[in-house]
Length: 401
Image 1 (cartoon, rainbow, N blue to C red):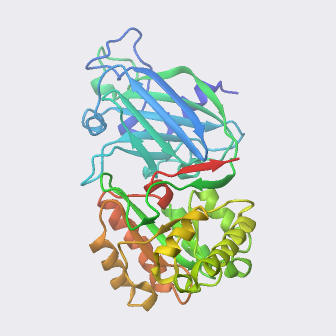
Image 2: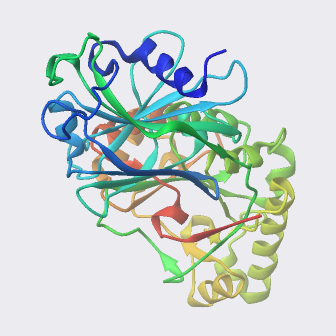
Image 3: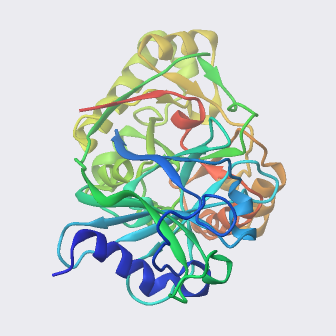
């Protein structure tokens, strides 16, 4: 049986191809031109549902410059379970119209495959450091025991002095793969902060929140299929009395496991703005109880009024119950079934940094919205947008047990 380090290196060699193939590093080599960028520190930890990868190099680097120099800085992750497939997660430059670095991952088995974008939050505190947070499912992993190692590479043609291997040279950190034991967290709530009534998120990051109203519905699972395939997070505002009928087979638990967020959209879509304090309390509280029951204990902190109709009294009531009332600032009016093209055009045309987009997964025939969704995702992603939940957009703290 191969030793852990050998397993990771052999796996990466199998898929590296011409751009990131690895070979032995020359001992005592320089950290400048002709040698891989040395790694001075790295860690992989779990924070709630997220994996957090931090890497610090000994020299300044730019993510976009890595590719131009033929270099890679990647995280290798491999489950300890026999037969499981590991992944290589590599740093890349920003998308068009964005300043934020990206991550791409490739499975470490099954032959060559195109790198896939990781739904991740990437930040930098200095020119030597990068921190990335992402769901294990975003890179095809489960909550399990994992081995990990950072690898910095340089192709053979650039290695100085020349190495005997045509594959190239590399350095790893730590020298032997480290072990992390992931546990599956249970999301039990979120903590609202800031304004009680929100139309959009901050405009200082290229992020966008897709939201869906009036579910769960018979087509909601198909919406989740698209989001999972595209590794996109969304927020679902649910009607309480539809949960028992349509949220079968763990649909709401599936949402939370994917990293999606669930919000309260009243018990039966009543006009709570006119219902007053007591009526609104009943509508919101019954829906929240249904969500807790379907999820195994998650208490939502996001509320959306039917039709977006609110009064100062309703906003005050919702906040007293622990909710922020969420409006929107991009509305393709998909509920009127204007056609897939019109829905798509409206979302893409009006998208902006910090936008909250309202669409519908329930309340009628939503086939047009479902058809438009992957088109919206592909275009917005090309424009450099990262898809986040409303809670992440607003910076809310999540509670786990």
